[in-house]
Length: 639
Image (cartoon, rainbow, N blue to C red; front, side):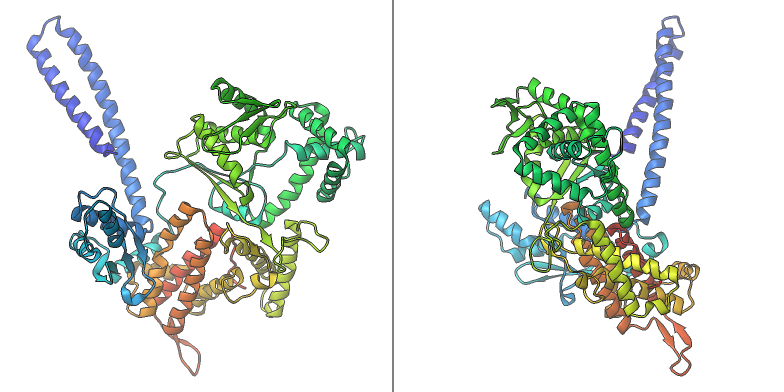
């Protein structure tokens, strides 16, 4: 893509040349025939004025963007990829799409980052009949590294690894930028509308902290047919007297039991679905009653987890489902199968059923309609579906059908399913109550509150915190630990849920991180240094990174943007949890080895403050706070 300012400037230059030429021609003619040229000249001048206005707006916009970018954190890995990408192109200009691999170095003695492209390039060249030693490739890459602000030196190791040592002075500048401008990760290359669709699970609440979220409630299918049929039998006067459905879970279990055991009830449940979808007023009334009970229960959970949801269930897409079926039919993509209307997508074994034999619609139809809405009406660039992994095949077929009909190009628009595994009890079986029921999330949150308070009192925190502080700490630990337990595991895998483990203040838990955060924040208070003093110090004090532990902490801090980029790429939030744990433990190493505050051993009075180390403390707390914010965890100042 070209430079828009240069393009506008070029057009302006051409127009101004044409204006000058026309002006000269009119002056030389000075006769009635020149009137037509004068009219054309006036039009050009008007367009020229508009172009100048647009150019000024564009220049201001670009200046503002550059100013903003100068305040954001640099993605070091991305910048190194740019540097080594340029070196590889210079060294091997004829090699098409050469592999580019830059990763942080795991062992400090080998440098800070490592470029591992040489070995893969050797394999690529070998496949083309060109045999080159990987170490020779690495040497040639090294020779072509452009001048840059970041790399202190490079060394070639082993078969062709290029070890990279960063400039400490530059990392220090990056940390000063962070302290002065706050934690501002680099802006995305595109600004997408990101929607999340999910059935409820703690991980979905937390994944959606990262992105705007849309809750697609399953409110229009067989389950509601069962519930409405059961409602009619149990509360026949529901149209005039509001039924006392307090426990929707128990009500659902009763209807499901009848659905499984009573054939007549099952048939009536299916008929209820059709009448519901045809918007029969009596069935809509029953549906609304049940939805309100469900919605109220959900809202309790949302309030605890501090999330906001846009609710848009299947009923929203009812009219759109009709249009979607017609669109597929118009393009000849619908087949009849024993009274059903089905759609086969390329490369998929299973068809989508868009209309059932009884004329009702299915989840297939509503998911197609919902996807079309998000692509065309919401104009989404990225759509993430967050549900359990068992629905992966279903969404694969839906996405394939949407591509087949031409709704989106996967090279342009990212539509993806982010599945999550099953939560297991400590017996390694599916997490259930002793009676075998599914554990309600609200009950889980209540239990978390009880246990976190017990833990705080066990540590005598109730004796040093006010009642308000204690309650805030209780909520922070309880809800933070439950969220973190979900998110600190790879969402694809099943995991064992244990209150004892998640409330342990040792190891990779929210409890440990929250305690670590409050300790870091308390260091400045102990030294009587307020935010104003820290801000002034950031403006005047270099962040020294001379001690090995200072350097290790500094490098860890500046990796934050690349961690966020990885999450955006693979949607695996446990990477951020692992990073925050690494940051907390790296800080502990630093604090144990490097005095931030020096006190008189006799009086305990502060005699010296090493301000650059206080700034490292402040930067660590700032990154942790941003990480907590992304995960939906609310830290407290005292715990």
